[in-house]
Image (cartoon, rainbow, N blue to C red; front, side, top):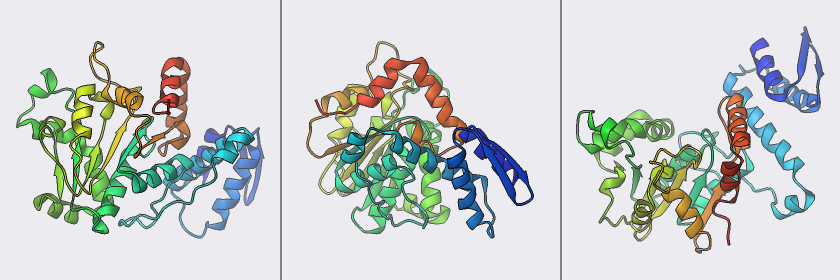
Length: 312
């Protein structure tokens, strides 16, 4: 209980005193803190985990930012009902308006870009949509890829071929699959090549039909690689491109293919863009504050993130 109260106090910048069943809350966000306490009191018969607390704080933050928007913007962006995805996780849903919009965009478009800071669910939700499409027989396979930025000096010292070298960097995609499909089922799908790991360098010349293709860490592609990837899409396929343009590992003289694509493809019909912010971070609440601090220190990156992919 005390650890849960500490999490709420730190995230909302309030002071909470507890004596038995009585709570005294003070601070500018006292009303929001009380709302959370009442919410958890109603389910107190079941154990409340740290994850439950942190996810609730994410949803509170998203609601608060929505309430703070100008009335004209609120009218332009009506509340969207979260789609239901068919996975092993019955509780899987968009926790923030941007996450809900992202899922709907993936379901309704053949190409979707998810751009924003770490921890916002870009990759996990993309994998969830891929699993959903596979379970509904809307596709025949899932293809996961990412650029091998370190394929020169650092990756060169690792044993194995390029696919084996890149494999550790695809671990977030593996973890999402294990969570959404189960370990045994995921392994069987790898063996049957229903799920394929394909380093971006191996994508050239291929045409992927009836597939759900995810390009992760797309900020580390070059414009040429991004164009090559996007033109691999065949009949009955979907592609999701995820990345964080504030964490580019390319050499300084190289332009990010993700930034280039957001600028070039803004007016192309059939392509959707979702821009995540720190309000969408579904990790420790402190991660959202870290993202905000870096954006405040780099206002040019913040402006680029917000305007990326907007129609010209």
